[in-house]
Image (cartoon, rainbow, N blue to C red):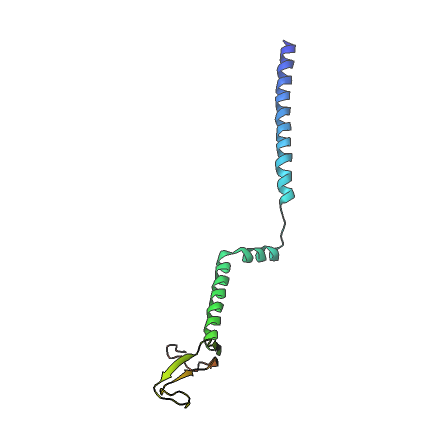
Length: 140
């Protein structure tokens, strides 16, 4: 009977030791890695991190960027605009016209053939526009 009691006692002791070992192993593998990855912040660092990651502030900074882009677009309307054109032409075949009278005095039947036009034609243009008043826009 004593042996049976000692055996029961040793089984209970073994079970409680296994629970303690299991709890210890669980704690070692869960708590230590969590504490290894945890960070500590000072109050100012925590406030700065919170302000940097706040969605309302990010949204308002995007709204500011959009407004700055619109202001740049409006300012660009008032800047001077310069445009240039160039046209270079070379007539390889000039138009021939037959006149009903002789202007050279060489043709007896009284007609003469004359070529009208220029072989080269060049045109250059430069235009500068500056807005002074935009009637559709009102300044308040």
